[in-house]
Length: 617
Image (spheres, rainbow, N blue to C red):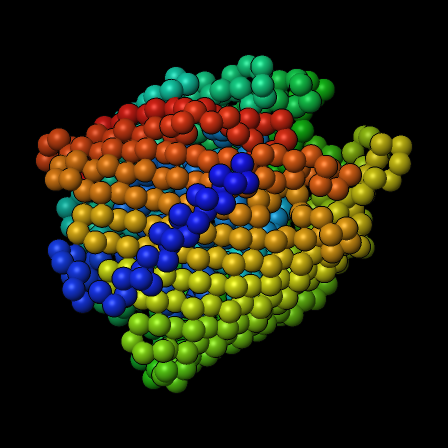
């Protein structure tokens, strides 16, 4: 596997560096559409990295944007299918179709990265990370992946980075319906419908979806494990003549997933929900003020052979942001209040905590030099005070290249499980735990041209006071704060749009080391690559993705003893616009029918084909 991976890696690395080779030929490229839309796709606006709209080359950060066109082309069954192999991103799943999933950014854990949906934080306060597997990709039109610490902007848990999902927003005009019906392998059925439009300054988007599958075994020789998900979305906004704006969002996913627990069948009834309302006003020509009130819920009722467990999280927040534009410079000043509460079937010493924060950021343009600096103070009822900051410098080398360097600090909050967990077997939390702390350095360069881009980043992240559950004897465990980690890595990504071709490639190297033992941190691949190729052929479109990763080690108490082999996946897709407003799509996941696992003893789905018919633009 190592030899094969190396040879394939070199081939893809050559493809990823293709823009460097053809830079000189850029003015002579023929047939490439010179459009604003194309430029926007290759250098999109990003809001997550700096709390303000910046093109990708202006963010001074490592960012990946998966836009609406990408989501429609790939039509993924899950968000993890979309994220796997993206620059700096690793994915671990306990099987396919609604099974427990984790997303690792730059070698950090699932609970050391942040998920936002339209600016609203969603995660389990007991486990620490979000339940990616319960979110339907068809509810979103865009994803921004920002790699590197963002604690000074978003507070706790943004150690490895931030993923923000954006729901569609209606536009002024007649109602625009969309309907999709499809199905395929494992008796899978998939339906979705939406309506968007607007008039008189009011815009709306309403959508619903249903996913139902018999699934496949998650362990060798096991039974099929099904999954169903019903999701709904409402988004409304209104802009007044004064340019003030108000809006609201409600997104809810509810369903059931079956899984295997120590050889016995089990299932989870889940709810994932975010609701929010905002108001934004232009206080003056240079000052805009925005207040957002929101609530998110992660609710899971687990049915095991030995009984029922309940872990419900409710997070309520108020966030106030003020943006001041001072010529070419911009200041962002804000405050945030967050209250977490949990309801569980186990006894917790504390069932709620609140966090108060203030933050400031300056975005300064001294062309060709750019400076971004931010500072945040958090005061948490459970684990005390934390101060985080960041500084990024950028330098434009001519019209097409940007060099960047950054330093940032961040922290991960101890979860309710870490602090207060109690169960009938004698496992217990530690209320004296403090937050994990991290500091990271990054050097990067980006080339941004008319029809392609490339981006290179080198980084190191030092994380201290890692919280690990340790054996206490008598088959019980408790969390301790003694470990540290050093994560080093490199990322190279590129995107090209020429004539009817769209190509994207990414190569990632990660060295996540446990400093106490010298072992690689569990569940992380150290090398990965991803290649996406699509072509338009009149009414037809053809494409495919290739994702390859080397081996990883499972979590265990004996070091890197359990090795999970690497793998390569090929996914194929085709589309046909067979009539005005009508189209059909075919996707074949894992086309080579590879058996692979990213978590010990949990296998993922083999070859699976899905067909769908769509109406609407």
